[in-house]
Length: 155
Image (cartoon, rainbow, N blue to C red; front, side, top):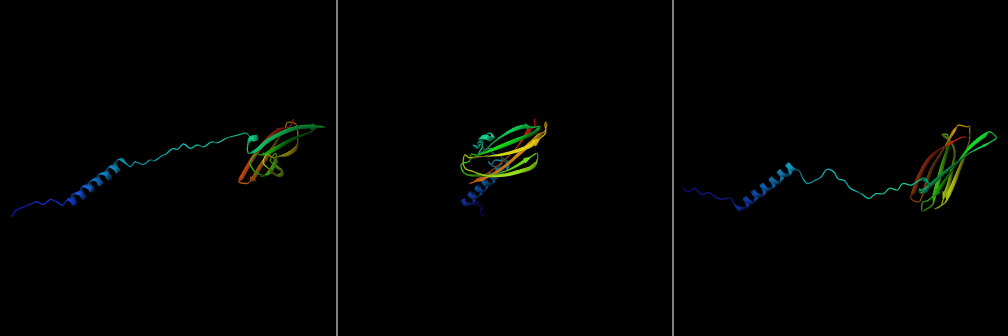
């Protein structure tokens, strides 16, 4: 009897070689990790323009005056609002003096138009009067709000 060794078919050795390559690749991936990332930083072009109240889309300017006549002193604050949006704006303003509600005013302003709101309060010498103007405006695709408080000394 003769003993002869048979060599495996070529298909089995190709399959075995492919299996070994895949196993080696998986082992290397587990040891060293994948080519992913855990953090990213992006530089996006974002510009924010900050402007003063007078130049804003809802322009705002306040003036105040103190007047004494016959030993009676009053302070007056006048707020002026400018619509600098490209369309019509409906503006509602709530005015408080020393934390107490005094008046509500509404106006519809076309582009470039302005409205003034004046409030007068009696006071004693040395006292400070706080005027608070809270404005909300709505227009075509526009919502805006602005709250400003001004302290005026009574002289």
